[in-house]
Image (cartoon, rainbow, N blue to C red; front, top):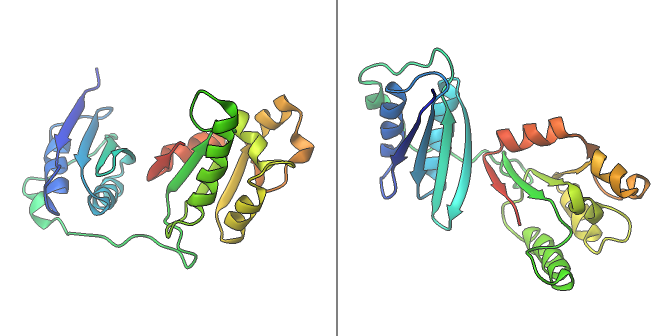
Amino acid sequence: MSERFDVDAVGDACPIPVVKTLKALRGSAAGDTVATTVDNEVAVQNLFKMAKEKGCSATSEQIADDRFVVTIEVGAGVAVASGEEDAVSCEVAEPESASGIVSGYVVAISSATMGSGSDELGGALMKSFIYVLGQQEILPETILFYNGGAHLTCTGSESLEDLRSFAEQGVEILTCGTCLNYYGITDELAVGDVTNMYVIVEKLSQARRIVKP
């Protein structure tokens, strides 16, 4: 049976989070997961770098303003040599493109409204969310639209201008084709490209960070 190893690295300066995670990996086996909680983006990046070097897949989730959980899936043949943590390097640079987009940051939108309660209020909140998202210094790499969120990329959406601005800046806009077909709005897609569940799962599973409004 696979095990989960939880590592608390909150408040630890670089490279301690990686050191602690390596020690947890040393005691793990294929199929196990190591979940490390940290309080800064640099630690997240360093953990992703280490996981890649070890041939492991990793995902991250922001659980609070200053709390991130990086989960590493332990693959077969992963080994940590004794004393390996002594050679850990510190701080990696953000993988940023010329457009200011950070690789791996994905936004997943599953509804045309934000939150529960009033649909009218929820629609206004979602419109505001998309607008404000576009004003951030760091833009997402991909924005995924599925289920009711598919309406936002189609003719009549009040967010089309903002979404087209994203696309012009290199942000990938992808809408679920099955969802477009279900709602009968395939021919009304006005921005971005049609995608499928395989791509959606791939984008989410490989994302450095996922934001769901």
